[in-house]
Image (cartoon, rainbow, N blue to C red; front, top):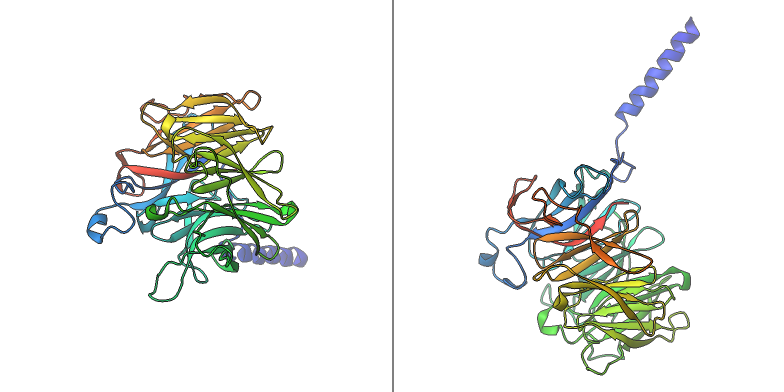
Length: 424
């Protein structure tokens, strides 16, 4: 009897300890079943075309705040394409811009308001109840981060467009750097991309791709400022293990003398080379990284300009091409000579920008310059694209409508999505 009493007391103590044990922010949370889209969204009233980054406070009066919208992305769900919830920030919209490109294993998602120079880290491990974990602005003398890519150790490697170069406070330098950041928003290490051999070149880090097998990183230089938009024409090679800058070089100039301008998003191709999209609507291909003799070649040019975020799926490269109001798919098995295999026109007015792939449902998400996003199916055998008409909002129209809504966080207005990521 005494032994039973002691055992019962022991179990009660264990239960009390488990109940009172605090939940640390980085501990694993119970994840809701289902599949979701996380759309980083700003107030559509602040389109950059209508108000530039340096417009006065009077131009910002009444704008809404940046928020993350959670949308049902499970094709088997009866609420497929419907809004699940939102989580808002305290940042009045200036330019809600990039998120990470794919959902990290940690479930801690980086998203940035570029013109505000502020980045948020969201905890989305429970998609039904996402939270803002923390935020940061300038780091270790660098400002205005742009792109975020995960390292094998789980940290983020981010491009920062500018360094603080002397007085006055906030002065933006002509170079920036790479910063490694953990999921709590703390700096792990940094490295400047300034190169004395290129004193007159614009060295504003924009996009990057990490190559762990060869201990290398490739980054591009392109400015987010309209006045400098045509000055970006270089890329850089780094050693990943110590973030040592190994080489800076110019991109290849093609026949139209234009398609190399403003190199932005580098993507690893199936042959180990790097494909880089430019605002001049070119595709530059970089080879020779592993032997520290990188070389670029302009291998394709799309119509128009301001081509946006590309996605590589297998041996296909999907490119958003605003001038065509379309997505265009290239077969890049022969990386030196890509071939168009399909295209999908979204509408007569929609200008696509962001694309992102979901291996789980075999779909691409697409956002553009208006308050709507779409899901598109990609046939990985033929490269054909087809609109997913099953993904629609309550009005039955394809895509998700961000215009003129009453949002769960209490704001009424039109949202403009930019970076969008699928749950794991």
